[in-house]
Image 1 (tube, rainbow, N blue to C red):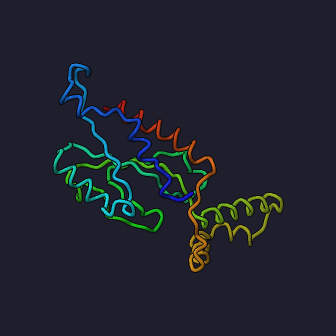
Image 2 (image 1 turned 120 degrees about the vertical axis):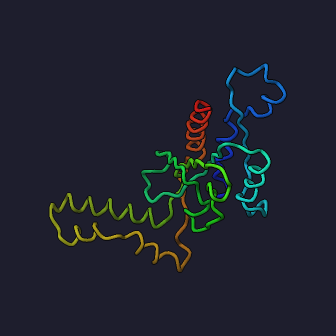
Image 3 (image 1 turned 135 degrees about the vertical axis):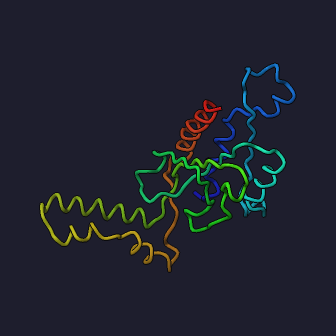
Length: 200
């Protein structure tokens, strides 16, 4: 599945309770103390021709929010972490960094307001799959052999970089998602959106 089809952020946004317009035009329908929340799905540079940081900076300058929450899918260095963790950081995010396609960072320094980044690992690269597979094989061989100095040494070495270097020249270091990625996005986006809604 192409990475541009992994629409985790936009899916989360579709489940967030947006209130900014209601506070302005229909405040009588909101509970007392409701906070102003607005959202945007800026799209990808290849579609819009505009960096996400440029879009968000324009919005921040006009709307003057107290906080920006950025949501994105992440590349993982472990198959086990796919859709099983939620990373939250107050240091912002660099879109595309996990797939060697760094864009301008989204941080307090670039946007002028605090930035909370929420990410869920949704893809791994071929080198990660190969590394995890080799580790599983070594563990199986070790269990059967009970003791083997060579296998112990091999397991301790950093095979990821070695495998990545072998795959890159031939463009074999593909980014891979599980076949049930749509279901994973559906469930994880619901969890993240509910968390955001409860926090506001």
